[in-house]
Length: 247
Image (tube, rainbow, N blue to C red; front, top):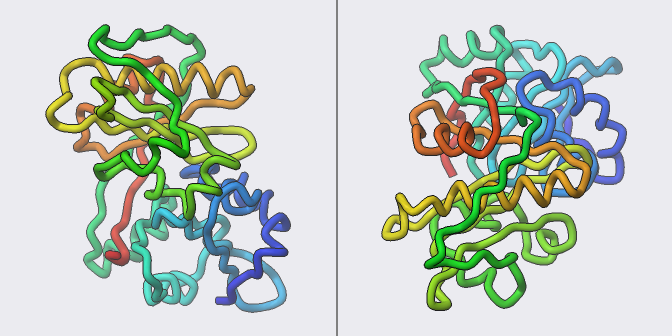
């Protein structure tokens, strides 16, 4: 397996588009919107391409050999690796080695935008240079964006605010065609509709940009699933998420 230099990433846009589990994250790397690594199999003919996003999500396009999968499982680095796939051969390879495997729900836009206003106690504001460092929690821009400069150049997001305190956040991973929405409401402000209101605002922004909103979450995240359906998504497919390496 060999690593591709960043100046050649655009050569792998078509490979990213062929990914059957998720095109967005591979495309975000190949198109240069977000940070990540690209690896290909050894040899003159490319049969497998591995995209490893900055956030730790990994995707394989093509027909990987066992040796290619073994090399992926042995990759070292400072970030985690969660493979997202619907390839039965990949799933079987890691299942035989007792890796932690779970279901990941992938939602697609149902085609009708229904605005969801925020609770009158709160206001919705864009993420700016003044408030980005006030965002806390697990789902924050730095989860999938290498730097705030990269985020403001290629991405966007919103926060729900009460008395100048940030109560919830939404932002996305970005390709030229799609935006995958991530939302988190801080525990003390949950059950007030903030996630749905911010997700709705994100969808409005994405659609005005001429892109397609996407949503994905772990099967066990029932709250995220309910929010997706409420905002206007429908379940498209169920992929597997394989925990290959912790951070």
